[in-house]
Length: 241
Image (cartoon, rainbow, N blue to C red; front, side, top):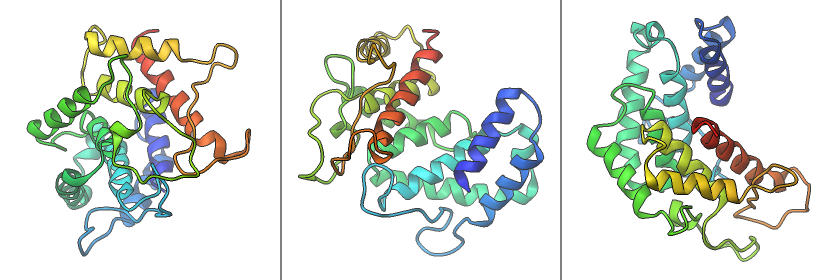
C-alpha cells in the first residue's frame, strides 16, 4: 500500500499535474493503515524476516520515511488538508523519535523525505545525518555496506568489503536530494566511483544479497543489483550525466 501510493504520487508529480484519482485512493488507504496506539504510534506495520536491509524490525522507520516522501511529493493543497493533519503530526513524531537509534541506511531515506516534506526534521537532525554520511565515505569516494549499519554477520552471505554499488548509489542520490551541489568535491568523487564501477556490457551495477547466496539469475539474486542500479542511475541523472 505504501509503495503503491509512493509510485502513483511520484508519477503525478512527474507529469506536473494534480493528484490522480488512483493516487488519492492509494493515499487514503495508506493513512488508514497507520498505527494509532502503542510504542509504534504513527508508524506502519512492516515485514520482519530478519533479513537486511529491508525486512528487519528497524525497517519500520524505512517504510514510515517512504510515507513521508510520498506525502511530501503531493501538491501543497493536499498537504494542507485538515483531515490528514493528525496523521502527519503522528508520523513526524514517530520519525523524529525513532530515528535516533536507527542505522544510517534508514536515516538516509529519512533525509531524502525531509527534503520533500516541510518540517519533517529539525535542521540539527538533518545536519547530523549529513555529517555522519560524510564521515563514513571511503577514500575512493564510495561507501561500504558496513557504513550503513551494524548488520548481522551471516556466514552464508557473499563477502562484501570496501565501497559497494548499492551503498554508494543510495548515499550519492540522497545527498543530492538533501541539497548537496554536484560541484561538491566529495559528491563528485562518489559520482566518479559510480561511473567507474558500472558493468560496461550490461549497464547494471553489481551488488549481492547481505543474507544468502542465491542462484545466479534468480529473482532473489537480483534484489540488490536492481536496487544498486536504480540508485546509481538516479544519482548520475541528477548530476546531468
